[in-house]
Image (cartoon, rainbow, N blue to C red; front, side, top):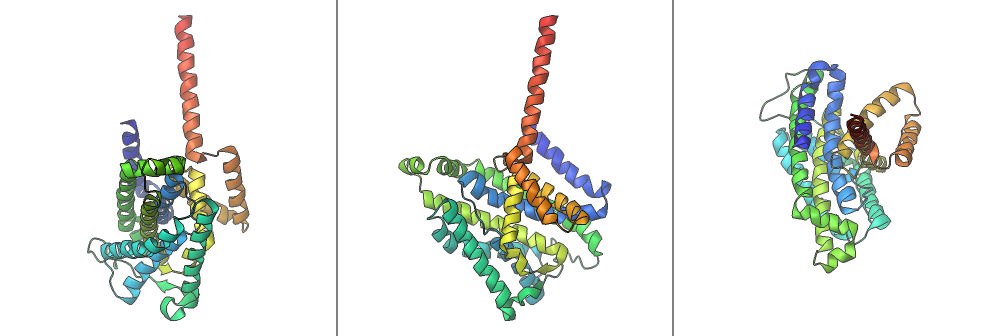
Length: 329
């Protein structure tokens, strides 16, 4: 009950954020919502299945390019149609790739996903007639719930209708993932993560469950990718590059993959931190790498894990003080 109340408070705070913050920070929240959805999918693989994917950015790029092709090339600008198309395409791509990748674990799984991601990156870069190469494909402003948003100034659009639409998507995606990880399917994934052989002996079809997690993660990545292309109005090959996958892993580790909400906290912290560091120095990648190293060493459970541990210690000290006062009386 307390957790539900806390989630409601956070959602209410996010809903009120555009009214109290500068519009720049409200627009910055739009890609953060996209990253939150994408890392929810990545954490289903990493945190719940025990599979580290170095190619998750491929599915982010699939979502982004689907949105760009539909709006710019096909003239289909209804966001809901684009969303369904991206989900379908991500699923079609993820199934054959997943069938191969889930046969392996640990570094072999990671390297295979990285290889497929870089193959897709090369396709986006080299097949200019289809993808326009490194220039990318423009994305036109989508319709939201059938409404044409063309009359809105860009900042007002991002900080207004698009902000709340993406927030709603994040709430729905978060609730869906919560149901998944707490369902029998999610429990099977955790059993596979903890002891694959024992789970197999108990009748769990390990590869099938891993494939299911891989496909779900791909769908979440594609949905996040659609949102990421909206602020820039462009889908470019960098969406699929290995460094982008690294950023997604960075977010997951930064927030803490041992907690359901950790990756979303990591996405929020990463984007705001990156924004501030980039404004201070051109060596921001070095600074971000240093921060990740410190987090791994000093807070292996991530920022959220660190905060929860601090809260638990504070409550223990408070309870101990109350007991001492009771004895003294």
